[in-house]
Length: 113
Image (cartoon, rainbow, N blue to C red; front, top):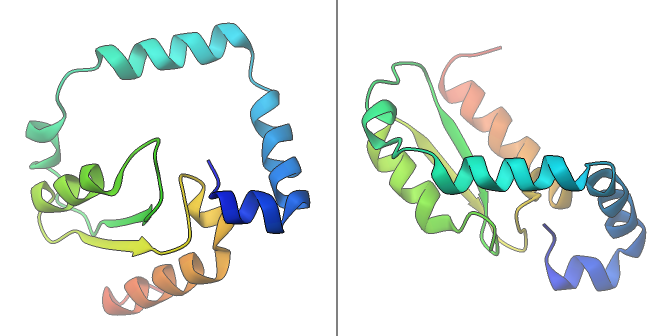
């Protein structure tokens, strides 16, 4: 969920995220993993999205690697992808300032206020 650098240099943040994750039950974790492992290919569905779409991804995400987000961007019409360096799966938590900037810039480009 977090980069090694964040876990080492920001132990309080790592502890907070670990606490959040620890609230899930083992049964819930297993069920979630099964759903992800057995879900159908979503590429045909992505091609039908017709709303402004921003995808935010951590460059060091090993849970959902950037290649997957790049494929999403390629299949969602007019989607924008922002890859945040120094962030993993919890990019919005780990690099909140970069994520907020990406969201604000994207919103402005879409005339969303």
